[in-house]
Length: 515
Image (cartoon, rainbow, N blue to C red):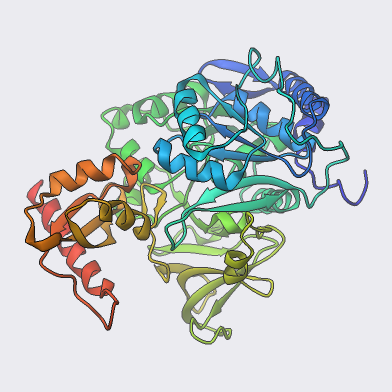
């Protein structure tokens, strides 16, 4: 093993297959795959990719629900040195086409359910990348020849492993490049802070186009020899049933999912006694959700992360079991954080509130083909998160707001500029501003304030239908208000703080109406 290959992620699977070949690696909707089979299939596909001319410098995209076949494609890419780019099937064909253009994949892999979506997105993007289905009768049986073949070489720690697209404060999504080394250190830190063993059973309910679907438990589980119960979609009643039937010991989800589980009709009878570690992230955890799980004897372990950091940054260790609401704990091992003055960039000491900066080996290699955005996100070795955090006198952190304008709905980042751009395409819209507002189910929902063109008659229902034709469902505003004008805070600047206050009141009034 050389210095350049000691942190490559393909070793996770191959090493475990040698040590415990007959242990179950994946339970995918009742179909069990052991470590030997998983490794043999992934290794064979990796060789097929190399033989067809794929290798370091190439990207292979997928449009697929979570599945064993997609996990095999991931490990095959890891072993061949190809960057794996899982794209969101929740997007419209038009939205997806923009990601295809940015990713510039050499090959696109799909499941049958999403093949039409991927084909239409590829057509809109004008991409010449061939499309092949996942699985033993698809890519594992025949690998199309690479259009620009490369010579095979050993995989390096610095090679890109994952490219995850995430919405930022601007309308255009950016591809976050995580190397093998980034993911190695991320999982090592996770193992040291919230360890898994070969006896664990992990319930994976996040879609695999999210970084947490790989780097918060699943990859660590395959490193440790645990079993991952893999769900292609999130159905609360089914998830609760699986916890009891499969003896699930640990899981990770977003607050919306935990609320939906606690609200499900089967919740009172659900067998949860095997759960020992239940991790929550992606958005702030509200007290009522935490209390609902605490009433069943389960403490939700809160944390904080972002894709650019691999994602794990802060977690609540066992010693902080009684941490107050909003606390996301302390840094993971091998992760450094700093509270910086947002204006000067200078470090703030002691109890303080400012922008959270992150440094460490799990911080990303940069945004895909976007050196300008990468430079904007970094300050030397420090990643500027754009999030406001408070550090108390004991050194515990809480996230108190965001410098960025994005809001998080059901664990999904939504960029207001993207929603505004879609609404502005309506011929009767003169001006539009979108802000996030608290929502008891989704964490936050978008609220749009729209000024009609020339005083035209324009309804919220018409605008919502217009938005649905151009945006994924989670991006469509939960409430649309028709207004005569937008408040301003200077020339050509919308007073978003006023709109956020107004939106919060509107959503609160709406929730009272339904009680």
